Length: 460
Image (cartoon, rainbow, N blue to C red; front, side, top):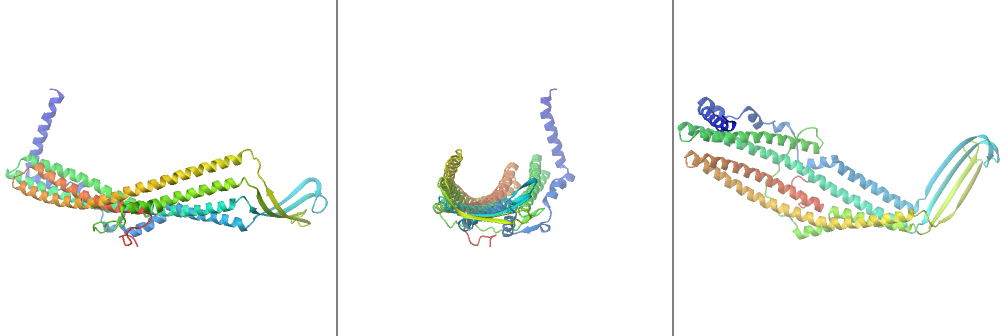
């Protein structure tokens, strides 16, 4: 007998064995109870034993821990010091002090003692103040101010990006927890339907394959439940990582009120994003930085005027005070040729300015594109919540009708299982739509760089 001919025979034997097994009363009770693994999945660790945070607490803690946000804050301090240095160049001279002591193998003339000696100590204090540098100091100051604006806009952008990521993790915990309840409800319904099918098979009102079909549905529901328990655990661990806790953290539940309309129209949101979104502000400030750097580099072609002063002391002791000399005056410097290094720097500065201009244009176009996509995502998710809620009502009623018809023998087991799966999918779709709406709102706010609702839940 060929191997292919054994397959139908083996399948038939398996079905007969399964039917006989499900017909035994002793096995009926076992079929109505989930396996130990599924039972354990239905009873995860008590939520009361986990640390629970509110959305506002999660946002506050994440802002202090996110490396990108910490770096953005430090960049503001760095840019502020650059601006202080640019200001100080107008009033504070550069000062340099130098001291040296040398011992020689033969006597040399010491200008401090006017005698031959094998030792020489020398100290000098010099200061210089640029009176004119072709306007370079003004360009440096304006570039430093633009750098501060860029850093502040970057901090705002990163703050909302950190908030967006935190909200995504927070909402994922709540959504996965609700999906866990949906999976548990599916297991419960499948167990009840299996009990009904067992009774109908025992009474002869249904064939034995009905209980096999429902046993398969119960098994699938239990497998999905195990996977959902794992997803809840991972989501809580991710939220714990976000708020700086070494372990799982639970999210405090949020309200289920319908999402409100946005207080701005799409056209207003696009105009605001292009004009004042953090991304566009960073690009414009970077363009000004590059432009001022180019002007400063170009100013290096002009003569510079420097006021200088110097004190120098000579001696053969540690403190050189035998002879001192002072000098002060004006120095004019005119760059003529330095091997084309000045031209190279100017060309590179011009290139950086061109790149910054292109980046600014692209950032403005990207802001319009991104806010349109985020705005539409919010409106779509908001409408999807209402449709998903309607789908749950329809699926619930359809399952109720199919259960009554099955008990009356007016429908097949396939229709009953289909109705059960449709209800599970509708409940899961409602959960996803509800939290996609919240996340889409956070996305719109991240692009605009401001909160659209002053009293949105989870914020002070």
